[in-house]
Image 1 (cartoon, one colour):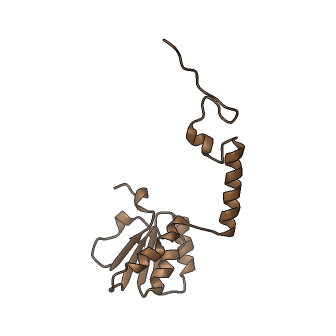
Image 2 (cartoon, helix red, strand yellow):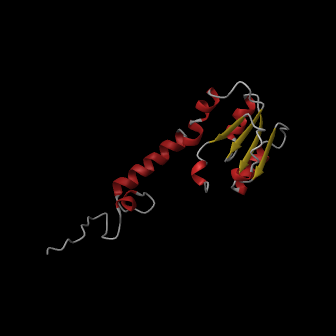
Image 3 (tube, rainbow, N blue to C red):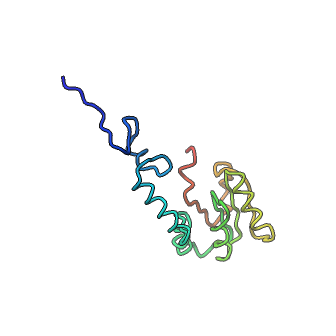
Length: 143
């Protein structure tokens, strides 16, 4: 039976996977590293966050009644701010204590916003929220 030798190139070793080869943090591939540097400069000049990208879509679909909103995985509070400007009292929760603390500090002077460190699973399902948002949070939960 013929044996198959692992293929290698100057930028890979027999133990590196295709994913590792494309990871700019670990690759020795000069093209991948050059593209990563270029993307870093581009993002520094034109910052873009895939989570924030969906906020406009969410806001356009808010129900008319939006007195009280829950933002799950609120992070630093960008969506909280937009929900607040849309007329809702907002409760933000985040499982990451540092994120919850940063968001709470941001809204410390706004009585219409409360932020706490916690998990969505611990929020009572009592119907007290007109709106519940979660952008890029569901995949962090054990459901």
